[in-house]
Image (cartoon, rainbow, N blue to C red; front, side, top):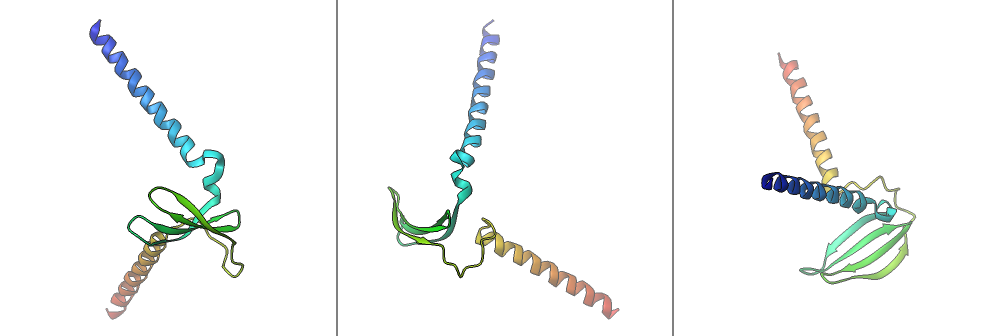
Length: 119
């Protein structure tokens, strides 16, 4: 009987951990729907643990001072009208990687075309 109780307790604990992980993942990204309206426009490190971040929220740009202990609102400005519309939350590295892959495909296609024309 002792082994059966241990196995059942183990299954119960694993089930509780999985249920808790599911609940946290479900609530974390969409908590109050706020993360859908936030976009980090720019961030600059100004110290070892300090940075200035520009966040777009509801058509306004929030300039925030971020440290290890707190976040401070430095300024709130309307989004500049002369900027193109935002296309999404694609990070700069993702854009760089896409352009590099596209350039690599173009150059390999060009080299294979020029190789077949030499024959």
